[in-house]
Length: 327
Image: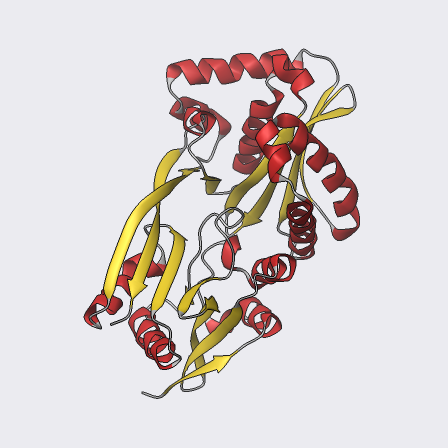
């Protein structure tokens, strides 16, 4: 079988993503070409872009989203804004793809792959590790962080019943208190490009108000990334804002992405003046309820072991850092 490796652009990758005939598995929002392009453009890491497609005859069997510094290659992106990452491969073509990739990397003088964060079901963990060991390469993988997610049932009542008794009682009690607080409105809406700037202004204000660490995290560069990412995802019709209002004041918001039947809770913010109404927590609860009503199958709280994620039914998924050293 004849294989080739071709250098690509973010634009060509976007065309491959939108063309389902390629049968590529784009496993999460964090590997989508517009996401990678926004990260690359905003952070300008000073590395060499290694964006490639592996072809079997004329058919694309996989995409390589890497950056190279010296003799080390890593994913395009960074763990602080890309919760997990992976290669994009046609199911069933993993071994062929990784064999071609390792050969090409070695010929280019790459001596190490540094890959993180990785889910247990990633292409790296399920296929690349075995291929690399067959090449005689040294593989070191260690658990570094966790992500939290849950499967969504078909009804809200089923979801409530899945919680332990204490949490079920707390959710119901807090919701009753919220709805009695006056004119309370919640909506989770797809955001179009013309609406993004105004909604991001409100979201980022609440984001910085909610916790001191978030205010410190939001540097000028990070704010540019958030705003650029929101515009890119809005153009793809993937961006969702959950908006909670009390007496016409926006008191809490969630920023998420609706992709492949899952809702990704990317970030959130709230006004601490409304702590007594638990608006930060309930903005997430109401978004879970809306996701169930919309028939989504999974809710992804994403990286981090915050207590509320487990209280709301989330299950822990380990995230790995994998180092592959070429011999």
